[in-house]
Image (cartoon, rainbow, N blue to C red; front, side, top):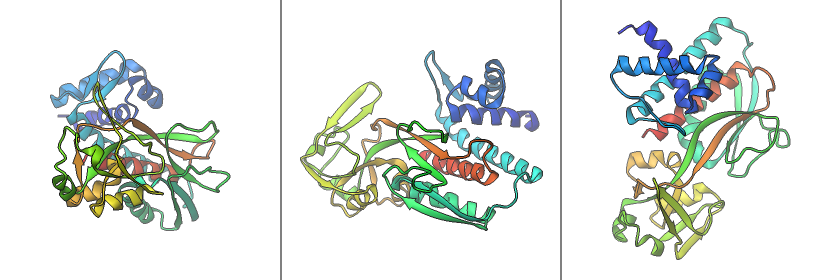
Length: 299
């Protein structure tokens, strides 16, 4: 196996996995679509594993491809970081960097990313505004925003991140006590801790099947964080992005209910206001957040 030749194919695969599009990856890499497709085919042949499921409408990653994409994303980040260090195009930035993000990304994604970021840029002082309410970069004096949902019509630069999907979670004791199983028949009689943006009815999907659940008992919470804590104390179940409860799944404090079902997909973007080439530290923060997003989703 020629590692040198394989590296370029791995980096191309990282972009295809990020874009979930041969056309989008080709545009980003300044290559032809045919060259990108050839590279992926060559990589699959070299590894002896299928990485991408191709269809007429869209592409998706195989389970092995999803795992490889996490490592390739880290590899791509390391290459970018190395090149930035070599060229030293930017002076070391200093001062505050204001960041806003929804509660769902605070613990599993943003804080681990900032830990590494602070080691690399010790003179930058992060200023955090964790809220599920959308903030404006200019009006609210924000440098970087992790924005979930449909993008506003603006001149801000938007870099795509892995999308969010909500799932059902509760403590193992809560699930056992109410005898909740994958049929979800008893879920409407169970207590639900509802986040501000969620409607009265929960819609979940499994491929072509759809279920609508309208709980009889609902606790209104002013943040997703509060709703999760309701569930952690065995007071209710919660409908939340998996990434928001990753640490609690690791410790066994929460468990997925009918994990094959999930809510609709919410797009997620990394917004910044730089019109031209973004500074190296902004690129690095995006890379770190992207890596931690993918690691959490792959759990």
